[in-house]
Length: 167
Image 1 (tube, rainbow, N blue to C red):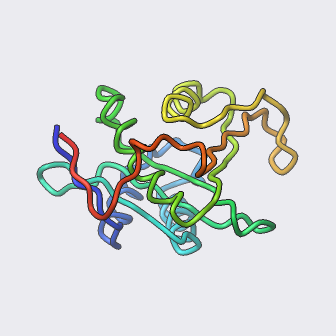
Image 2: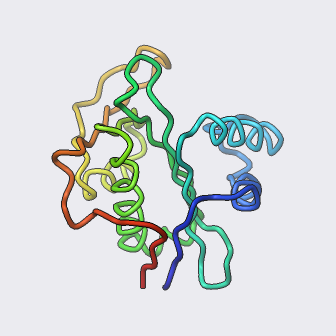
Image 3: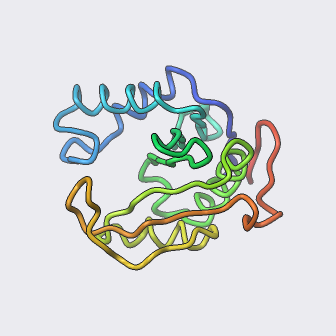
């Protein structure tokens, strides 16, 4: 399928807030809390990108916020619709382009991923993120992998400029 990646707008964010699984506790409890948390996350982000399908419907958001104690490190986050469950290669390729753009602003991207999210960990590993051994994350008490990607070690093929299209 063909996708267009551009900076996200308020319609993209609102649509994706409504698409969050109602039972998901990751973004809060209930639709209103999901929407509030996503809006606050977007507001704190220095970059928020949206992928849109051929009909112009948003199907993924990626964002990055500066790490509070190190402005050279960006904390990445993402939210994707179920359609990518059947197209993991498309999602991996789109993510690579977006992360390359983020590495233009940050020397390193990182986050902590719950060990139960094996598909997310594998996606990030396939893109080139280093996956540290699982450990208890001090802030949440959850067992997580620290995942990180240095700008200097990112694959040259992921260097994207401007809006991108992927077939």
